[in-house]
Each structure stands twice: as structure tokens, then as C-alpha cells.
Amino acid sequence: MESNAMKPRRPLLPLHPSLREAYDPAAFRAFGHDLVDRLADHLHDSVGRRRPSSYPVGTPEDELAYWTAFMARSGSRDEAIGAALERSNQLHDPRYMGHQVAVPFPQEAMLGALTDLLNNGQAIYEMGPTNATLEHVLLNEVGKALGLPEECGGVLCHGGTLGNLVALLAAQRKLGMRLDQDPWRHGIRQADPFVVLVSEQAHYCVDRAVRIMGWGPDAVVLVKTDAHHRMDVADLARQAEGQRKQGNKLLAVVGSACTTSAGAYDPLQDIAEWAHTEDVWFHVEGAHGAP
Image (cartoon, rainbow, N blue to C red; front, side):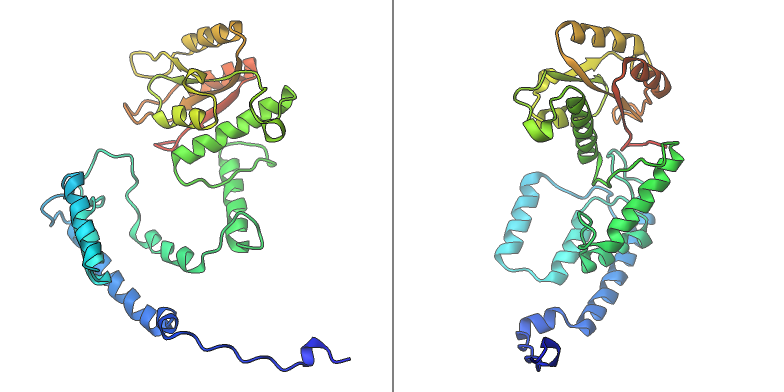
């Protein structure tokens, strides 16, 4: 019997000319060099405040009209790059301020091209062995730095909104399993009502995460803050007691490190001690400035 290894291989079908051009290494190299030069020039002008404004964007109507017309006339890729550089917020300009967006390190930003080209996901090991492993190693190091147990784990999330949602989903799963109401198995229709305690100065994405989870606005309990815009732990205890008397289960307390509105750090140690005593999940929302 002839093995498959001995059978002659069928010749590969020739690539369509457009695909051959799209995947041509020489064309990629030339485009990459040109793009890096343009980005470096952009960085030079932004850092040196050589542009008229750090916030060049007009009204939403202006931008919609510009890009609609651009698409209608099939503008070139080269023109699109130039327009994007000119019309976008100039985060590297020292005059730019006012948004909770990190200013990218230029060399690290180039690594985005590496990950985009490889396009290895990390949901499962076989699809992204390097990414999945690096995530595990990195989060172990983060856990050590935070003093967490060796068996701790986690996932990388794109931004604070998704990070808060994932953390609160984990809290919901843990409390649900303890109450024999595992949401993964039974959903939330028959579950006891949950509430999340959070500072009145906290970012709105915490409220949004709770709503996405299906608990509605009443499940977000706002805790008063002190003169420095930090969570009042005494009011936290009062709010928690009031919710328990109403028959609600305490899903989690969320501390801010720090708030986007005032840059205030909640008294995390005091909140942690309260949460430990009351056996409540403590989540620190640190996307804006956690050490």
C-alpha cells in the first residue's frame, strides 16, 4: 500500500496578481520604510510643537463630510495616511491634555505592526502559543508585584471598560457559585438581586458594566465621598447594611485608583479591610493611574 508520504504533491495554484502584490515582501518593505519616515516626521513636529494646534479636529459634521467625500472619490492610501496624521489629536504635543489616553512610546507602538502581521490570537494556545504564554508570564509577574498568591491568574483586557466588566463577571461567578446560583449554568433570571457599591466619583464605565451584566441601574449603589473626593468608608458600611436589609446581595465594592474626575485615590487599605471583614469581593478600578 502506498503511503500518503510517497504520493506526489499537487502543484499549488498560482496566486491572483492582486494577492501576489498584497503579499509581496519587497513592496511591504518599501511601504514600511516610507511609513516609518512619515511617522518619525510627525513625531518630530508634534513633540516640537510645530503644528498649529494639538487638537486640529473640527465639528463632527466637518469630519463626516470630509471622510464621506474622501471615500466617494476613492482617495489614495497615501492621502489617507496624511489626512489621518493631520486631522487626529496630537497626543505627543506638549500642549495636548484633557483625555484619559496614554501617550504611546514610539518604539513600542511599532510592535503593533508585529502583532498585526502575525495575527496570533491568545484565546487558545494552539492559535497563539507565544501570545498565550507571554500573557501567562506577564500576569504572574504582575501578581507577584501585587503580593497575590502564586496560583493567581488573569487576562489582558483592552482598556478599563472591558477590564471592569471582566472583573465584575468574575465576582458574579464566585458569589453565584457560593449561593448555588452559578450564572454560567443557570443564568441570572432566578438569581438573588445583586448590587455593586462604588464611589459617586467613580468612572461611568462601572455603571455601564453592571447594566451590561443585566442588573440595571438600581444595582449600582453610589457611596458618598469626603472633602478630597475619596470614598467615605463609613458611608460604605451604611450603604451595605441598607442593601442587606432590602434583601440584596453584595456583589462587590469597587475602589478607584484613581478617579478620572479629580485624580483621587480611594482609601484602598481601609476598603480592603472592610471587604475582608464583610466577605465582599473588592475590585480596584486602576485603569487611569494605578501604581
